[in-house]
Length: 457
Image 1 (cartoon, rainbow, N blue to C red):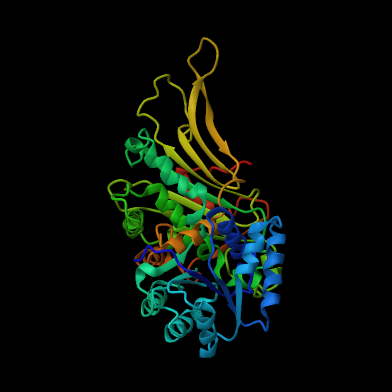
Image 2 (image 1 turned 30 degrees about the vertical axis):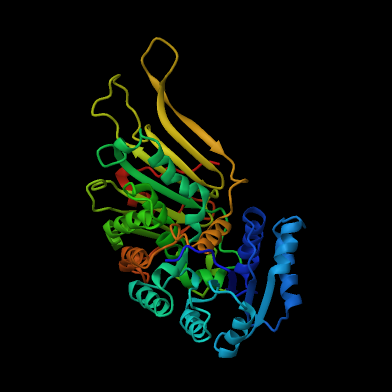
């Protein structure tokens, strides 16, 4: 893997939503913060010219609150545009001309995975893949076999070290902070194991529905949209062993080990729900069985975590919008003061959004003569307004050849192996009312390991 900085940035799908919502603001941030000064070449089939493409970029920056400053002007000045069909070799011949003397381009494929193969082949045939890096968006396949085939297709034209599979969750500051907090503070490691941890809960709640994403969402559902990727990455950060060595692959090696140790899901370990009114959303199929809520129970077959249940739930139309993890610690074998103490008393809570919090649940004595106490939280709170946006961080890392925050082929296949047994609606879905915490069956799933700890905002 080369660590030389890329000398051109190409993004295919340059007129799409992802470019408008994420890529233009991220590139402007890189120009402002890191002196990003590369030719930026957009490729799409929209019937546009360069002026129309620049207008789209200006509108994106304005829409996302970017001031009209020097970095915005610099971004517009760096833009090039190629309009053409991805199946037409002449599109890539024109791209080669726009690349000029660039020797190490970074290609961002903001296009459907079904086009990865033909685009990669055309890039190679036009000599645009030599010493190049390629960034691809999820989904990385639909199951183990398709993700494997997708990886083989990309590896025909790019070495694995130059393939950057982007999961923006890994670029989030609070998600990275999980690892830092765990491994930078020596008091946590001795108790971060099955001897002291009772259970782990992760909740990703959204207080809105699928909105204008009905057609897309009805093809994936909650399990594939956020659990198979984002939530499993959070599970990994919470449970991996300390990385060894200083190379970029040290953390990814630990994630891969952990992911292979997660027991594949069974029908008994998943509950699917669908909020009332989902089927009336434009783009959703009549009678759709797709879940908008999912709760799962993971188990890790390792010495560190054997016997510790990990519960994950994710859903739309919940009471709040919040993502957080709670690590519950075991109570001592005997309560010294004879109290009845809730199992949830001793815990660590890590909030990942919309703001960042780290809280420790402890008991303190209630004032008075009796030796009785109450549960309180010691909380560190920080708003996320100054955090580097995930796409800015990840595009900067890809330009530098730093792949630590990107998925690797073996890791992707391991994630699919975990969820593959429950793909294809092998379990029924249960209706739930908008504004609730999902179907009652989710409470039955967690059973005596509960209750679910509902985030408060």
